[in-house]
Each structure stands twice: as C-alpha cells, then as structure tokens.
Length: 612
Image 1 (cartoon, rainbow, N blue to C red):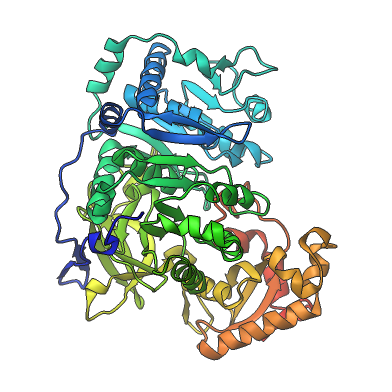
Image 2 (spheres, rainbow, N blue to C red; image 1 turned 135 degrees about the horizontal axis):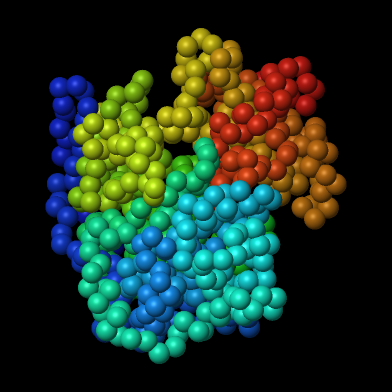
C-alpha cells in the first residue's frame, strides 16, 4: 500500500523572496540542500551491496515475460563494460554514442561508461529511423567524434549506420548483425575484466566530471549538446529526496516509456530509481495509436508507486483507465504521487485523473508538477504539495535560486544552482549566450506569480519568449497559455494547434485534428476513415468545432485570446525540417515559416476556413 500520510511527507511549500532595486525577484527555498555523493556511480555500488537481489531494471522479452536485472548483476556487468571501454580507447574526447531506444542493454552500456568516467551521448532514435536525410544524425556524429556507437538492432539501423564514416570507431550491437561482420556483439563486452583499471578510473570521477551529453530537441536549429555533470545529477536527486521524504519508506517502482535521450526520462526518472534503489519497468509503449496498448498491458500487470508522464501520455491513457475498472484500481492502488512535466496540462485531463482516483481508491492521489530543462538536470521548481490547479510549477527546490525579470505582464525565468549545466558541448558562443551577467541560466520561459501577495502559492508557467508575438494593434499574444486553453476547450477533437496572427488584426489557428476522436462525429471508425481531407471537411465536425470555439471566445473575448478563424493542418509535420521533435513538441515558428502558404489561406476567404 502507499506510504501512510504521503501528503504529510512533502516538504512544506515555502519560499524566501528578495526584491532587488531593479525590480527583479529572487526566490529561494528556505530548506538547505543536504550533502550528496560526488558521483552517481556511488549509488550503484551502494545498492549492489545493500540490496543485491532487488530488481533494478526490467524489460519485456520476446515471449512477453519480464527479463529482470538486479543491482548486483548490473554492477558486475557495468564494471566489465567499463573495463572494455577503457581498453578500447574511449575517453572524454572519444565518447560513447547510443542510437537506440530504452533497453536493458542500453542501460548497461550507460552504466559502464559512467563507472569508467567516459561521457555517453544517447541520441534520439528518430534521427536514425524516422529522418529521411539523416542530417541531424550525421551532424551529431561529426560533432561527437565517438569512439564507439551502440545500436540495439544493427539491421534496423543499417541504413543510418551506412551514412556514417566507416572507420576510426567501433560499433557494438545488442544482437549480432546478420549483414555486417565488423559489428561487435554486446556480449563480448561482458568478458573478464581488470578490476584495478576500473577502480582507478572510478576514483578520478568527481562532481564536475561529465557524465553524459544530452542533446536538445533541435526544434529551432541543429541540436545543442548539454554537458551533464555528476554534480547536476546528484544534487538534483538529493533535492528530490528532500521534497518527497516518503521515498525513504519503500523503494519506488515506476513503469516508464519516457526516452533516455531526453532529460525527463533519462535524468529525472532513471536517476531517481538509481538514487533510491528502486525498480524501473521499461515501457515500450508510447502515447500514440497502437503503441499505447503496450503501455496499457504493462499497467494492467504492474502497480507503480510513482507515475511520470507528459500531458499527451496522460491524455492517451485516460480512456483505458475510464473503461477498465480493474486496470484503474491496479494503477492507483499503490501510487504515492502522479507527476506531469515537459508541457502544460489541460485542466480537463487533471480533473479526469482526480475523479478516477477518488472513485477507485476513495481519495485523490497527490498530483504535482515541476519545471526544468535539459540544462537544469532537469528539476528546478516543483509544487511541494498537491494542488488541484493545472499549470502550476511551484517554487525553487532546495539548492536552486530563481530570478524573475519583469517582461510585459509576466516574468522571464532565470536559474542558478548546482543543478545548472556548465555549458554546451564544443559551442562556446552558445554557452556564453546562455547566461546573464550574474551567472543565471536564461531559460527563455515566462511565468507569473499565482498570487502576487502570497509568493508561497508558487508560479505559473505561461510559455516561451520566442513564441510570443504582437498583433498589428500592438497587443501581445502569449502562445503557450493560449495553446493549452484551446486544446482544452476543443477536447478531445483537436490534438494540437499552431497559433497565428503576427502583424495581423486577429488570432488564427492551424489545427491538428485528433483523428480517432473525430471519427464518431463523422459516423465512421478509425479503421474506416476514407481520407483525412474528407474527415475534416465533415459538416458536423466543423460545426462542433465552431460551437466549442464560440463558447471559448465568450469566456475569452479580448483580442489577445479570442480566436477568429481555424484551418486544419493535414500535412504530417517533419522532424528533418525542425517542425516537430521526437517527443511531439511543435516548433511554432518552424511550422509558420515552412507552411506560410497555409497561413495565407487561413487569412483568406478559403471555404475550408472555419470562421467565428
């Protein structure tokens, strides 16, 4: 059962506020950050000694069962891999590059590199498997100059590997290639090893040693390599353990699909399990049609104690929880908390989750949120206590300092602390531009105080500075908040929107339909959709969208929030063109630039435009 009085085991939500002469607000947590280990590897050694048989990681095997890796074996194999990586000449100048998605073998490669003091760089699998030109993959390979490349399935990645230079590095595969004898088998890295060499290398790893290089999504250009130090990772997990003291009551269990090439899954979640001696069940599902069923199957079997997801993930999961009482009960019965991050959560999703929790187990499971970036390890702010308000991102965590700089009617959010990155990989100019004159990281995000008279009520996320624009009247439009409100108002028919209106008199939307949700209105099924153009031209669907937006406009009549027109965006967005990331985050500016013709249609008399 969940830890008793979980709510009472959250850190009190308090803040120290200093107002500077220039109007800047400095926010600090009154609770000091406690001591933590100098590197993340110490936690692997600790749990291998104190809980050697406990499952650390688990993944479905080909037969549908769970292949499990305990802490003792994880350490033994990581030490063997570390020794081999050192013998093969990998070092901070020749790091490990990983192209595949989450897996037991990928985890062991990362842990081995960690013990050897060799940086590793997990790369989005989409750059190898979805991209048509492999442009970002080739760019990252040249930038990293890796000493080794790891792929889970060499045949699946054969086309991507063929675009890379064929010399001066080693390729290791999770399974032996049937077409390339030059590719090493993963099992060869698990042979006998020299413990003295690994011990010596591990002793040199300090707080400022680079653990890994995580690349930003590249939504506004080529990805930037964020240097992740051991200080960042360890201090962040220490702060989290102080926020949620109930983590000491029992080892956490999570079922998680979030990719390790991104900071939410790869730093927050993976490291939380390692830091606290928990168990991570690798979820091979995703919040997409067909793939979500894998997540559902896992949650029908495993009861997590913590559940982390992005808003799209909760949205995709909710219909299954609402339709399957047994699954719903299994999902909620052991939960200490739910957490969302990476994007704003529509209030309607929050309310549905709380309702299910109340109906199923008789009380609301605490639901919290936080804010951070790849550059902040990632957590920088968190709601310290359960709240019923979506959009809240809380207050600075122990050890982190927030600076709020006035910007229009909001604040520009800046951060300092041990969890902040030292710079971008081989990009000194980008590094210098990332910090202000006082050394605060410039996040580029905007926030407001939930209650200006009571700062302990926390801050609310409002959007990205780069996504804001002005109408021709000079009125500012905040895209982040508007986007979430529109999706919520039209739920579940609209999956996402691109907000238009720069230098125009009114706001317009390019809307991406939720095809599956639209089908019942159009008297069809997902499997029988004739084509997307016919579907979105359906009179009933267009009338319903019009009615929903009219209701929204009545509650939001100002020119900065009122929607005047909508046109469906039917062409798939491109990763190669920087229109969308592999997490599904839409680059508003990129879409507007690449689809300028659609924007012109939106503001024309085109009969497909829904006018309000």
